[in-house]
Image 1: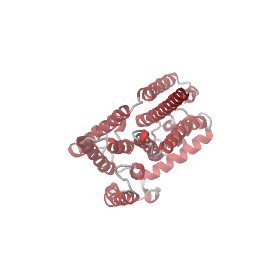
Image 2: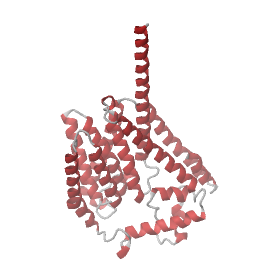
Image 3: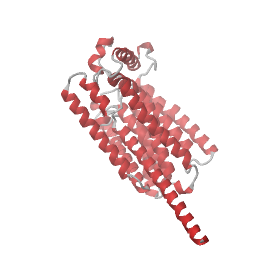
Length: 353
């Protein structure tokens, strides 16, 4: 992936861009390497999940402080936002979408009353904050995340009846609270009709990206260069593509999209396989909720980012790293099982001899 991005920059003969690209991928690679090599035991996963929950909680508090006490700093239609890489409402909505499954499955495994209370407060605060980001893409991803958490749950929602009532309650909460908040944004259309600016601009950007890709199919127009050329393809405003796979395609070409989809689909395939293999085995009891949390987070990241550009977001690399760590922990367990079987067979042989 790094080679493809470097090539997409080299075609522009822009050396500083090449250097920045290499530095960027070294940083991501280091983060990924540390996650997959340092996280192996149950406590390691819990600490990492808690780190994401605590960091997200800090952004929630910050966002509400701005929303309530400093509304003049809000730049988008009276919507809660964070700061840093999540200083836009859509970015904060993505983080909430990814963090919710991690918090939910922590709640399934933690036993302390105080920890459970904090996690319940986090889940509720995330739900309310998501509504006030007024992000349609985040609502779709978040709703999917909560639904899958209920379906995959083994402790909080044990029986099919309880799961069914949980999803009915979710539907009621979304229809009676979240959608009411969302439509205060003044959304009149999700397809760009009736002059709805946000959706119309997205459709215009997608149209430009498709035509731009047709002109630069192999290596794209260069990483981060879509906005430099978008006006040449009929756009009357400068904006990003607002679709992550399409953004990867237009900026790095078919080779870049192939690499992006490959590491995404391989990780998802491995997580699905591990979840299916674990089943209801007691010896994998802690790994099941960990796998589900990462799997749902990554799935809903992809749903959410169909309406935003987040192929380099920190949450993606945390999820990919956690996915690799899950695979490592699972393989370690399988190896341990093999050693126990061999030891048992050796003992039986000794007894027989």
